[in-house]
Image 1 (cartoon, helix red, strand yellow):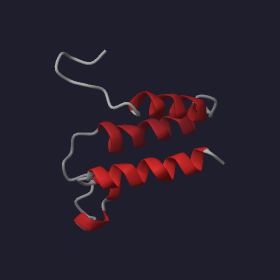
Image 2 (spheres, one colour):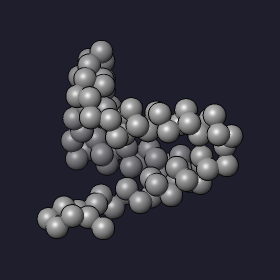
Image 3 (cartoon, one colour):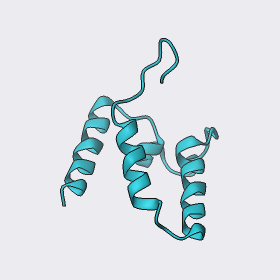
Length: 82
């Protein structure tokens, strides 16, 4: 559950379920590689994780507008519908 006053994005659980379905059956070495990528890109706190990428090209690693989020959800929905 979220802390009081904080909400969980509605798509967070979807991301968890998708990751579990896609990654759990992989061999340990591959799961560890994915674990490190998730740690670095999703959970890491380094503000310069995308410092080498121009701000307008950072995508999900940069500041995202409501329009950017909507476009990402549409792209993901199309990919999952295949």
